[in-house]
Image (cartoon, rainbow, N blue to C red; front, side, top):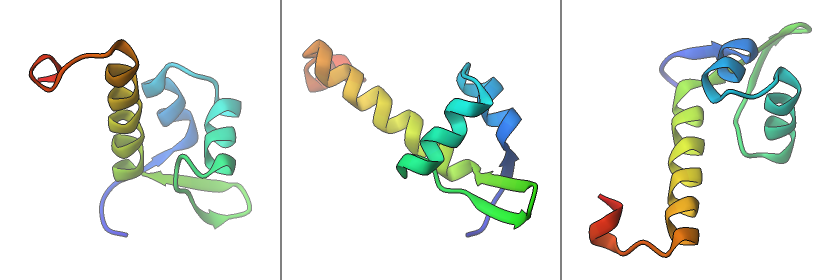
Length: 71
């Protein structure tokens, strides 16, 4: 995995959720995480970007937006 790694607290702030929710997303498999030590969990930025894209796609589908409206 190349790229930028983010701390759990940074991801929580960015997504507007708690750190506990971020750990839950990791455990569910919605976010990838790498442990660099017993207290150092890092999340690849690409994993956060993918999660946001998936959630946005699901939201648009739930609203029933057409392909043209999605752009």
